[in-house]
Amino acid sequence: MVRIGIVGSGFMAETHADAYAGIDDATIVAVASPSTADEFVDSTGLEAATYSSADELLEDGTVDAIDICSPTPTHRPIVEQAAEHGVDAFCEKPIAGTLEDARAIADVAEESGISLMVGHVLRFFPQYERIRGVVDDGGIGTPGVARARRLSPFPSWGHDNWYADRDRSGGVLVDLAIHDLDYLRWVVGDVDRVFARRSIWDGGEHAHVTLRFEDGAVGYVEASWGLPESQELTHSLEIAGDDGLLEYDGNDAAVTTMTAGGTETASPVDAGGYQRELEAFVESVRTGTEPPVTAQDAIETLRLSIAANRSATEGRPVAVEEVVA
Picture 1 (cartoon, one colour):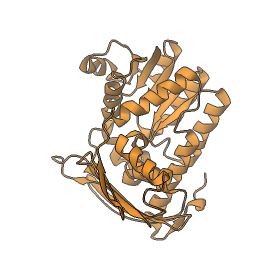
Picture 2: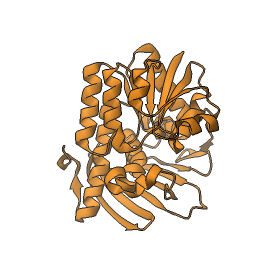
Picture 3: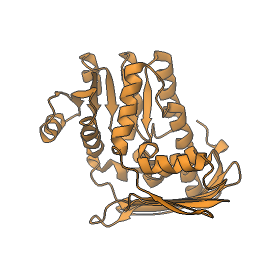
Picture 4: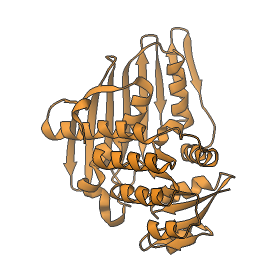
């Protein structure tokens, strides 16, 4: 049984706690949060010890791995603490807010020998996994155009409204668009340059990014924290190749493949993406194997988000190779 310590007590910590409940060979034994760990344990029904900090939790020596669901600026110091104690770590996306911190995280994990996985969860949802499988199998030919949308209300649940501080959260391009930037890079390939535009207002942000992939394909990512609070997250994906088209509407579980041979609709049914993601992490901890999403994967995706932010700020296309620590 892999003993997990969760760091954080917000929305993502709750999401991960629900996911671990469906994993037979993992159990949450500890929760760390500066002021609300006890409240979190009570609200989730966990039987777990509580701590005021990740360092305090790690010092107690009761966990095999920690799951970091705290704000982005805390990721580097917490991974460094985990490395000091030889404890494996799962880190929510983005891996960090800057390339300097991201590379420091990767370096300390490698030097200490701990397993480090980063939470790019779209890779684990059955629908998104199916789409990549169809592309990899040549089901739509060579991808030429990809479009992804992810729209939500502003994440007002963040502690001390930290998402509104773009120096801490990176804004919608680093925190939300990063999901689809990572997925498209995973499916279509490396990106050469980006061009982005955004609008920011009190309590909201909306942005779009045009991607030029190294093989000449073009991508479009739209991300928003502008929906009314009464609305739920909405997301969709299209990938067109020279032999067909894939469509997925997040409001419907079905993935549609359209080719000259006809139209096929499939509705993959499986455990949720978060559970499948954390099952993969637990397996890497249990077996000592490399996790499926590495620090280097997360660094390359973070470069795309930073390039998009720079493009939106400077009003010009930005080559990904310009983004260095």
